[in-house]
Amino acid sequence: MNAAAAPAQPLSEKAIARATAKTFAVLTTLLPDGRPQSHVMWVDTDGTNLIMNTEVHRRKYRNVAADPRVTILLPDIENPYIFSEVRGRVTAEIRGPQARENIEELAMKYMGTAYPAPIQSERVILIISPERVYDHERP
Amino acid sequence: MNAAAAPAQPLSEKAIARATAKTFAVLTTLLPDGRPQSHVMWVDTDGTNLIMNTEVHRRKYRNVAADPRVTILLPDIENPYIFSEVRGRVTAEIRGPQARENIEELAMKYMGTAYPAPIQSERVILIISPERVYDHERP
Image (cartoon, rainbow over the protein chains, first blue to last red):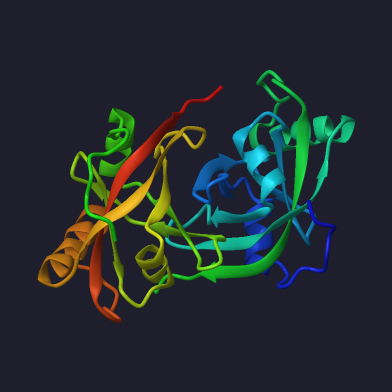
């Protein structure tokens, strides 16, 4: 993974609001042959980056370890015709107790409960730095 | 675009049901440098392929004209934790009156009205043949 760099284009206010809400984001990573793979994900933000949490045996984690370029679609939770798309790359990852605590924080945000699923390998936080942010409004 | 071929993996019943419902799909195409781009789209199916409708000046159309490999995320409209992901490629396109009629059919499906937005260039139907279909169930 590359070292963190200043984002090429900062998150918009709408992208921050959508990443803060209980939004079901769509993370797209690149398979080894360059084809895209998409998955629905919980999401959060520190105001500068998007934050996701996965496990190290997952295809999407192995994808970003090989090619950190991703795009994240943040649907508006009120209006299905509008959304933010955040293109960027995974610039850092965090494993260990902090990643385990973070998935509990996300479960509390989305479900109001402890994380209900078994941990199958090791949790990992993905820090995604934005490079291009697009807020789609209805035409 | 390549000639249509038999799909490597046919659409699942769940993918067909989700493409038939008023699902807001996420289409991901590949930019010229290989980065993914995602956009929310109306969707339909003929039972074998997924069908989308765009305009020829759009970035996503220019993307698939150069590289037909796409993935389409079909969220379940009842449960945000489950979805189908259909990876495949655009194997055919249809322009002209049929594409103009098709956008009206999609508007009727989703909105129950005539298509409300101005046509900015030329409408084009994208026929997306599945190669790998994944139905995600909640763990």
